[in-house]
Image 1 (cartoon, rainbow, N blue to C red):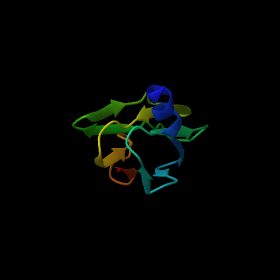
Image 2 (tube, rainbow, N blue to C red; image 1 turned 90 degrees about the horizontal axis):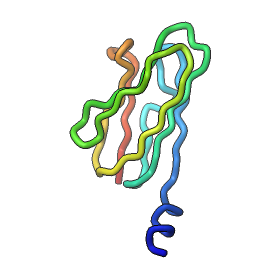
Image 3 (cartoon, rainbow, N blue to C red; image 1 turned 90 degrees about the vertical axis):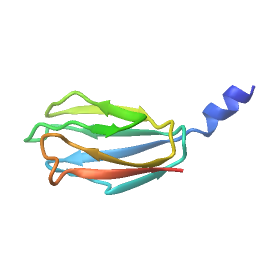
Image 4 (cartoon, helix red, strand yellow; image 1 turned 120 degrees about the vertical axis):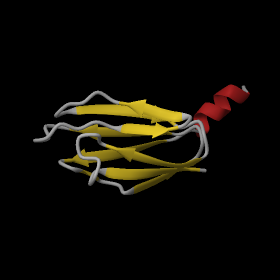
Length: 95
């Protein structure tokens, strides 16, 4: 019963992506929540990457795609697109 209640409290935040930008500069979530990134028919190739200890991930690279990650640690995490890392970055704050 406790496990079911914990899952029910987890939330998903959606972040859209365009050519060389994330629609959200910062997303704030609770520990155990998921962020879902999505992009479609972009002119440039994109991906979603975190190199943070404990929250490291790397999506596939493409003109269209989606990727989800559930954050299990509290902290502030920088998310980038490795194809445009100087301009395409955002922050996920986990409380």
